[in-house]
Image (tube, rainbow, N blue to C red; front, side, top):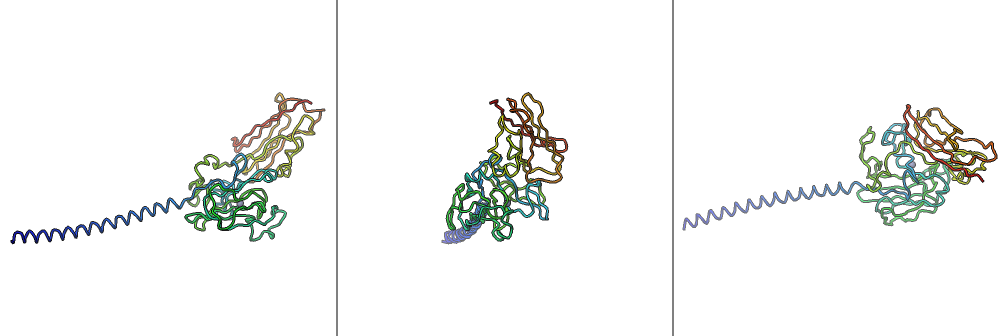
Length: 358
Ligand SMILES: [Zn+2]
């Protein structure tokens, strides 16, 4: 039956065409699926690539700890931070988070793992001594001091430096979780002040956690890889006051850095009444004035400093006077610290203290 045969033939060729078409479609589908898989893989890889960092220290930035130095973004022998400010120094490859003084350090400020990972390096036997005392030769090759290196997924690594001798409490091979205590802030290695030096690397390259992916010569480009929950804590502060108060003696930087100044509070019988402010991040051209007023608002002392000739990592300003009467008159004494730049106020702090007659 030709018709049938024809039909049969045409049915056969139709089914062949359908099979070929199906094969083509399924091949295209496979390709499409493969592309989709590749794309989703790429998307996954990209999502996995950017780490989110918890604060690597148990403290509150701007209140109990301070970002002293950021990563240097200047390729020359000069230095600039990610906002083109001077809060860095040449070749600085990490973020320095400082605490105020020795007394606080002795209480034990915890260093925390910034993300989940695996410990791949530790050192724990170096003395807590300023490099100004120990000398550079004594710490050569061990500039990090007591420290920890953690390997994270996606080629990320974090390093924690200058920790207290004997305080490192994780071992190589150990898994860490974000926020896990791994040691204490100290003064080991190449450092002159109590702080954590925190370095972030991605596939061996230094990353500024405040400005990931920042283009060269940008001021404020890139994006923060700090955990969103940190909010304003990781905001850039060009200048910061880290200590202020009144004392019954003239404060020195040594008294402030040791925390000993707290042992000389102002009282009505104090030999002197001195207000002090320690600020970090002051810039060349900044003008500072610290005034002290007695009860009733009469000016007791004013320290009007000339404009700074260069940027200052830290600066101590004092204003006050010696006691001339039997006791300081009772009442409230207040101090006002102002920093101006080209006539505009850029920082201000007012604080006070009470003199109670005995
Ligand atoms: Zn550092």
